[in-house]
Image 1 (cartoon, rainbow, N blue to C red):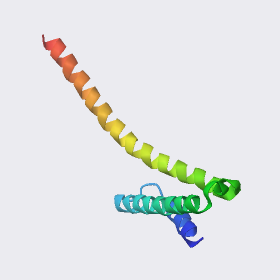
Image 2 (image 1 turned 120 degrees about the horizontal axis):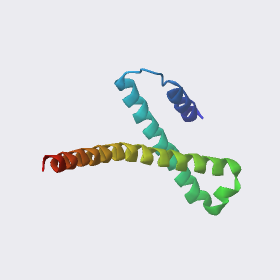
Image 3 (image 1 turned 135 degrees about the vertical axis):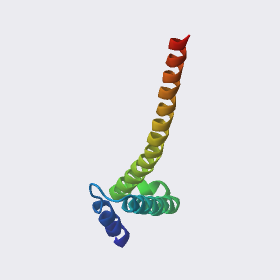
Length: 102
C-alpha cells in the first residue's frame, strides 16, 4: 500500500512549466513503479494461475499494468514517429526543391 501511495504522490507532483529535471525524475519513478507492479502481477499469476482472474481486484490490477506498459510503449513510439515524420517532411522538401531547380 505504501508503494501505491508513493506512486500517487509522484503522479500528483506534475505541474505546468516544471523543469526538465523534475520531468525526467517523475518519468524514471513511473518506470520503476511499472516494473514493480508488473513483477507483482507476474508473481501472482505464477502462484495463483487461473484463479488469479477470479478476484476482481486482480483483474483490475492486471488491466492497469497492461495499460501502463502500453502507455510506455506508445510514448516511445510517439517520439520515434515524430522523428521519422520529420525525416519524411525533409525528404519531401528536398525532393520538391530538386524538382523545381530542374
